[in-house]
Amino acid sequence: MYTATVAWFENNSDGRPAPVGTRLPNGLGLYDMSGNVWEWCRDIYIASAYKQHAKVDPVCITGGRDRVIRGGGWHLDAWSARCSRRLAFDPELFGPALGFRLVMKTTV
Image (cartoon, rainbow, N blue to C red; front, side, top):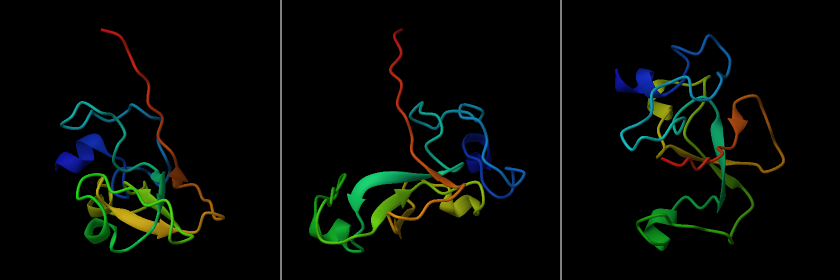
């Protein structure tokens, strides 16, 4: 199963988040884009965002209160551990499966 090689989710996480960089990179060469912790996003959650805005990378910064979280977490199934998995989340809540992703530029 491809997901198990690039993401931490309920079947391989031992019930807790894992250190970053401990799975293989995805098809784009990026690490930790799926699973482990849900990613807080800049967007305001709008269920019909892909119908109202650009088909590629729609950004909604007005029109609601809940924020977008993406990518699944260590506590859910493999299907939820996808970059495209998108949910609404109250911005005042928090938990052990919610975080953000950092980007590090390296030189070759």
